[in-house]
Amino acid sequence: MEDQQTYLGVTFDKRMTWKQHITSAEAKARRKLNIMRKLAGTKWGANEKILKSVYQGNVRPHLEYGSSAWMTAAKSHHQTLDKVQKQALRIITGAMKSTPIRSMEDITNIPPLGKRRECKAMIQATKYQCSQDHPMNNRLKQLSSGRLKRSSFTLETRALQRKHQETLPKYIEPIVFTMNNTPSRHYSCCTLHQKQNR
Image 1 (tube, rainbow, N blue to C red):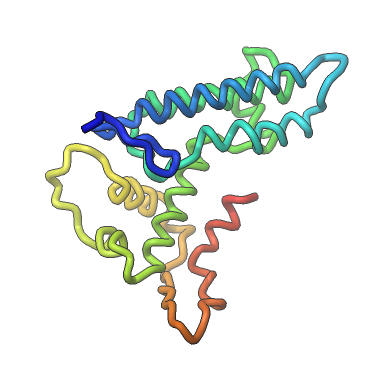
Image 2: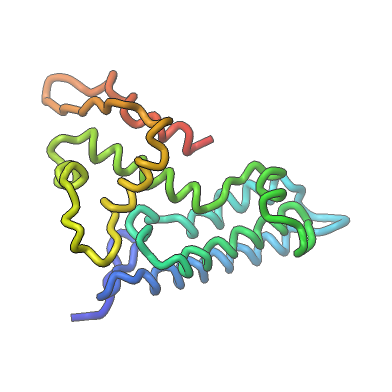
């Protein structure tokens, strides 16, 4: 048996450290980052709007694809991807290395990757809660045994829900699929998705 397997573009390693997946994602993103560098210039080249579109459409997808799966990776792995966005922000703004990251995020209106990962995880958890038949629905409802030494999607999303409980909806209406009707009025359970796409 191989030490790692790739499924739907996400690489699972034997110990679920996600190191190989994140290393690969970083390499792909950095190759696209080189395109941004070639497009940018002080007296010529693409402007901030174009560079931002290139980053959001071609670089950032590599940095966060499948993040709901590998959200339990070590902080150092997350920081590896965060550094790529920081470099992209400097290319977009033309700022010096000493420029605070927060200032560049505000100027470009590009949120930190960590915030986007949290939002994506909460959206995924809400989708599970909307579907009564999904196996993860029951897991999210069950109390943790306290014996787990490693983190998991369930533990991480519960922590996020506690952190943002004041802004989350109090009730999630389940979606019931039948052959005779479509769940057209139940999409409100995933309204977090609208905030994510802004």
